[in-house]
Image (cartoon, rainbow, N blue to C red):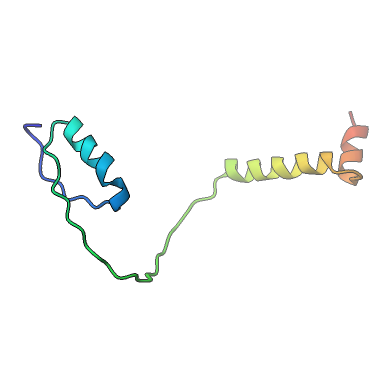
Length: 83
């Protein structure tokens, strides 16, 4: 790790042991963990997502297959008659 830079990391106390082992296995020195007591806080987050055509098609397929197995279904009867 000759070209590595110092890293500041945060971990839950339950994860400190395996994270320390990971750092050592990569050739680093064992971390000197400190603990901080942080108060609980509520924060507002905003997120964006994109719904693709493939996602909508998958939802439609789920709905179609459900309609085919739930008796009696006019949709299922029509599809089975058209075979």
